[in-house]
Image (cartoon, rainbow, N blue to C red):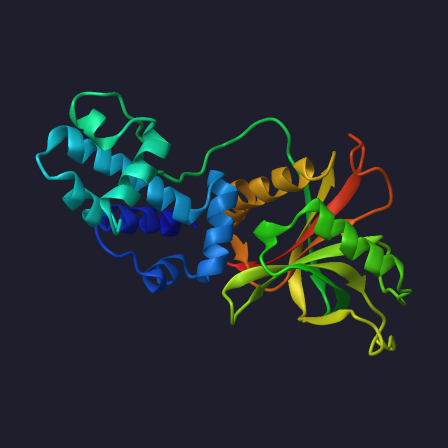
Length: 279
């Protein structure tokens, strides 16, 4: 995983002044582009698109200081359609104009990322590996892009679920399911629960997600939501995956909520992350 992601960074560095092919990134990562973006944002704290944009603006500033190219030529070189669009983005990041940098003003630099495995002390998360049979999941679609989830949308979905009595097949209060829409190349987020095979939801507004059998890393989380969820995903992607040789299986993953106060330091929940061994 570490080698793959470093190859991605190397490819991006070599193409900051040209088109970056999403299909090449998919091939290098062996993930879909949507999954690559998701894992990258968990590891780095910002999206892949944002990283590329900030690296280009960093290189543009260096070119302005050290070279003699016109501002418009540098703008076009790094993918901006006009000088105005480039100047706006440049000033937003560097807090000064391109002309000011050319005259000697200070500017910011985002260095290239380098991924590595490090031995970490401190808190270790409780993870167990479980084989789970395929199941049906019924729920309310909260967002067609999980990045756009809001508390209002989440609460509206909860109210719909509370109005419908399901013959659920789990001990959890409810689940948050994150799954990729292959047509739209984004991750959808659904709030719901595992349902019994005999459950008839044809007269409800619920949607059905058929989840295949998979091996899961079941991560026990303790602490307030959403902080404990972010901590769990960070640990899985930057420690568990590379050290244990696993990868996301690219089937739905789940936040498993229990009863209790989600804002409490003692709140307990789980992540179910489908996994398979790296080749």
